[in-house]
Image (cartoon, rainbow, N blue to C red; front, side, top):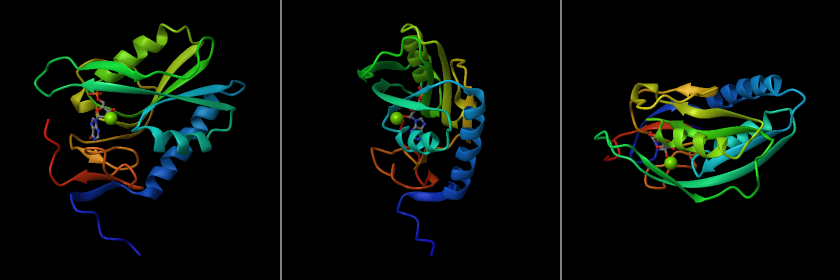
Length: 182
Ligand code: IMP
Ligand code: MG
């Protein structure tokens, strides 16, 4: 029943079942926290798409969704990450209760930029939900309100996360055999 792992994959970190269970728990928590409100999920393309759609189905308050795309250039030598919006949201978020959905928070540069940008658009509230969190590599402090999993300092793929645009469609999260070059 269990298919062999694709070449390049070392081991599975979180199975489909673990992911589904955690997303169910998170969805229930978010539904309680936003009871009586309409939630606008804002996804960061493309990595957060699998997580966002799974999470949306486990949320019981009314949900709207919108997406933005970014390009970021960061390196491991300590230079600040440069982020810009390559594809903006379709609609205004003014007065809305926005939950920003990320695939992974690593150094925090991407999230800091996005929070500053979105806060300037006068949402009623702005919170962050990330699928994965690698706090050991954080350089700038950013608020993370909800997260599915904390992960070790290894490059991971699957459930939306890519290595050179591949592996996003894996149903699980896996560690790569060879770390992506910085
Ligand atoms: P940050 O700005 O350093 O927090 O970078 C976050 C972005 O880096 C994420 O949105 C991902 O696109 C990418 N990233 C960081 N770590 C990984 C990983 O382990 N696998 C795939 N992408 C990653
Ligand atoms: Mg990415």
